Image 1 (spheres, rainbow, N blue to C red):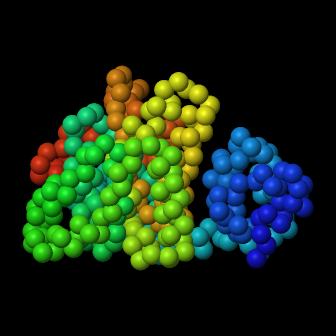
Image 2: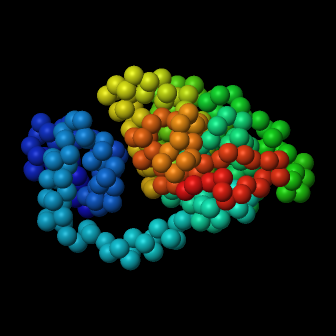
Length: 296
């Protein structure tokens, strides 16, 4: 199978090809499948036009690599799982639950219950779907007790709760660059199947992304937007490449959208990150949420 770098040297020249960032997708087939991710990664280096030129060259020279939409759809469906949040109403809004090929952003004001819903989703991913969870805690809010309480509501005994908690790996992260390093490490481990835990992860929770990116976006600098864009690409890459459901928690800011909903934090550009946007305004102890509290 032809390598992207080899084709790039022929089409773009040695200088430009050496600056190409393939995001780890080395084959021509992978390049075509993840073209949008690679184009975004090279936006400020070799430029989108050069990436588009490379794409045209790959398509014209290697037509047998192109798969039909039906083939790609069938392959995706075989690998996709739907994780429950524990609330039938929330699952309904999300289209039956969290899909292991999507990024879902859940946002709302402080104290509305975003973390509680995240705890419950993580617990049930292990209990009902027999998978591992990575939980990124950026504000020291993770509580094993609250996760245990969520499991007890589903009549799970104490002995089994201990085993489930071991399947949730919690990372205390307070810096965006530390987050990037951790995510790159996870991608490498999962692809190489170098450790059993990573290969069984089907849910990644970021609780929350707001304190990590706000300092970089506060002055609306180009460097800040590049950092946020890099994080967004990692989320999308993990969901698409590893078939992991990515649940990102974000805060809300003052003001309202055109539809009268509170605005999510981090600005308009960040809103393009998620496949689905979920607004939470209240979440009670019984884990029931009315559809009017959401927009997706």
